[in-house]
Length: 371
Image 1 (cartoon, one colour):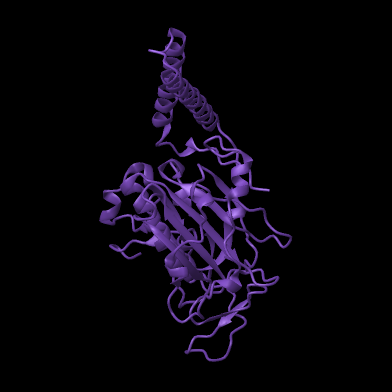
Image 2 (tube, one colour):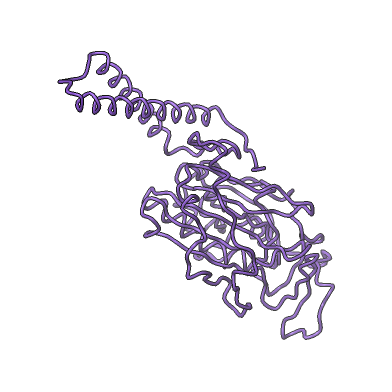
C-alpha cells in the first residue's frame, strides 16, 4: 500500500479547489453539450436557465482556477497520499502506475569507471498511463528486510522545499555500518551516505525512511546528484513538471543495493526538454563491498592486502572548526569566504564540526575557498 504523507490545511484547501474545478468543468461541458443539441433540434437559443447554469459553471471554474494559480508556487500545494493524489485522482490512478523492469532485463554493463550509464537508449520505461497521471508522490513500503522500494512522483515547483533541510542522522538504512566506514582516499572520507531516492531539493522529503538507502559517496554525488540537479534546473527554468521514478535494486537478500535506476521525463513538452534513464552504480573505486551486509575493505593499489579493519576506531581526529552552510545550494564555506557575503540570510547556517561531518550531512565544499 502506498506511503501516506501527512496532510496540511493548505493541502486540504488545494484539494478543495481542485474538486471545485473538476465539478465546475463537468457542469460547463454538460451545458455546452445541451446547447449543441438544442441548436441541432432547431432551438434558436438557450433558455435563461441554461445561460444561468453555464455562467455558474464558468464562474466556478474561474474561482477554482484562480485559487489553484494563487497556490501554485507553494511547496505544500500537493496532496501526496497513496490513495488520493493531489489533484483529486482516485486510487484507480495509482493502480495504473507501473514498476520499473526487473534487473535481469536492464542489460546493465559491468562497472568500469563511469558512475552512471545510459539504459534503454536513455528512454524511461514509463507507460502512457504513467505519463497521464496527475499530481502524486509515492514511496513503496519497506520489505520484510527493511529495504526501500520504488519512489515515484510528479515533481515541479510546487513540490520543491521552502524550508531548510533537517537532520537525517537518526535514519540508518539497511547496509548502514556502525562504526562508520572511512577511507582517506574517499571524498569526505565517509564511504556511505544516506541517499535520497527522490532528492530533497525536488520533493522536500527529508528523513523519510522509505526514501533513504545506503549509498556510496560516488553514487550519491557523482551518479545521482548531477541528474537531480538537471531536473531541478529544468523545472526552475521552465516551470514545467517532471515524472520521476527511482528504483533501488537489491539482489537476493542483500542489504545493500547494487544500484539505482533513475528515470525522468518532462510532461508539458513530451520529454523534449528533459528525458533520461540511467543506472547509477552503488560502488566506490578502490573499495571492496560485501553487498549482503555492507561490510567493506580497502582495495586501493597502495594497500594490496584487503584491510577488513577499515572501519574508523576514532583514533584519527579531524580538526573541528566553524563553517557556514548554504542550505539552498548545499555548499559549505569558510566564514570569511566571499561567497558567504553574497549569501541570503535565510540560506545561511553556522555549523561547528569537522569537514567530513559537513560532507556526510550532504554538503559539498565551496569551489572558491576550498574548505
